[in-house]
Length: 266
Image (cartoon, rainbow, N blue to C red):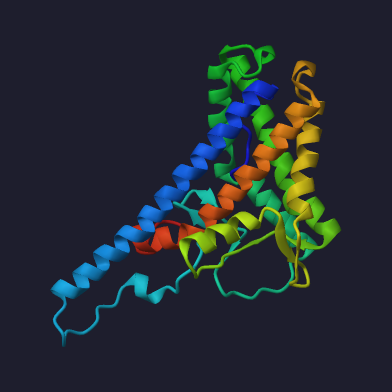
């Protein structure tokens, strides 16, 4: 999942994390808008100028794949197992499926990338001075970030969804305007589907992330524990999850426009 905090847990640096998350979300939205707009215009112009009126329509991999089709991985690396293609109806998740989804997101070969990157960033910024520097310091940052990620995955994707009977998958909208789809994706941080298919308040995301943030106080240095830092970690986690939903919503369009549905993991 794309939801780890950016190192420092003290209140004044937590504000920097929030600003960073907002900046990344704005850049992500602008990039997605540009990608969705530019190829469509280029394709339209090419069709108008180069295709003879009676020429047969060429067939391609893009034409064969319906819009809104998700892949198991994004860019062939990032896990995307919980994303459901647009207009797809699935039976309710079983307890086993929820457990396997959380396990895949936590222990997939690529799950080390984000904790490793955040560990390097945290050490470079000296986010937790008690961890110190050097190889030993990096190892401390790494395992703390890895436990953070795993804890939230199981809280948000398995434990809470089982108790509340919520569906932890992301259902792609796949149609409508850019703003409409963005609003839909962002709303999934507070709205989800129940196992019966009804839209409900997303207890799993809101309270699961809060539980994970609270649990982290058990293994971080005492100097890093406070209500404000725990609350800021929770808010950033939910915000990053919401941004990841936006990326998942538009990933099929990006894959179709840039990779023509041929990128690894399709």
